[in-house]
Image (cartoon, rainbow, N blue to C red):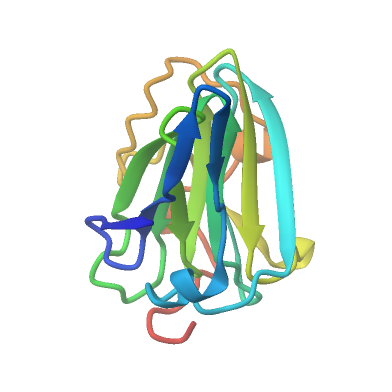
Length: 184
């Protein structure tokens, strides 16, 4: 597999090795020792999948104090996937990485603990799959406004479809209970 570092050192793009011929293709979506070599060391305990239509934007979400790292990929379709450093005291606080994930490029994105995560669907539909290194904890869930001008994400969709929770999420500057850099 090929691992690409991003502008945020903890966020990684993973390109699994693809074996293909006229019959189709095969790839390993996860093998623990290979990921451990690149600093993804915690065991995954929960897998999630969502299907969304064009223009659906989910995020920006995270949990604290029960944090989650996520290894995300698209099984069908295409999304713009975003990770935002929201760790108070981080030298990269408020900075983001945006990566296109699709069924064609088969890329994965490692979103570490302490980073908010979101995606918008750029194809007619998208099946989005992610592995989590801790369990979902509703009482610890936080949201950050998807269009916070201080973060400045270009989602590439004019009028995304949002949940009520995401539409009403606070700006990063107004968010409370954010994780602290160096304590995750």
